[in-house]
Image (tube, rainbow, N blue to C red; front, side):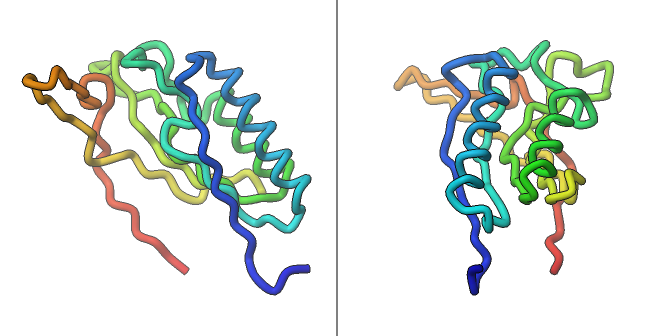
Length: 153
């Protein structure tokens, strides 16, 4: 038994495949490895775009937070009795005017599999430097959130 709270951060990426199910399997394997190393881990943190990074191909790849895929991510936290911070999930918009865009949503799930916090990224990464042939516009595929999240004890 530890005299401290054990937290783990995992640096991973999803850009090698746009297969969201394969990316889930990667996350599942990493959570299993962490818990096998130390069953006392209380929280695991995943980075932004852990589930999908599709080179501007968000259309058709965003998912509802209450949908089948994120339900599997919630179950993963419950199954391993660990809180998980999912750094950026491609959340589908309910707005019929925005079918080609989704939200970059950070979700915190507790060890019961319940969502404790959800934050839709407010400030999207847009940079355009023509003289360097650099153009990255997150706003072309992602909607900006509207709420600031207040932390609590």
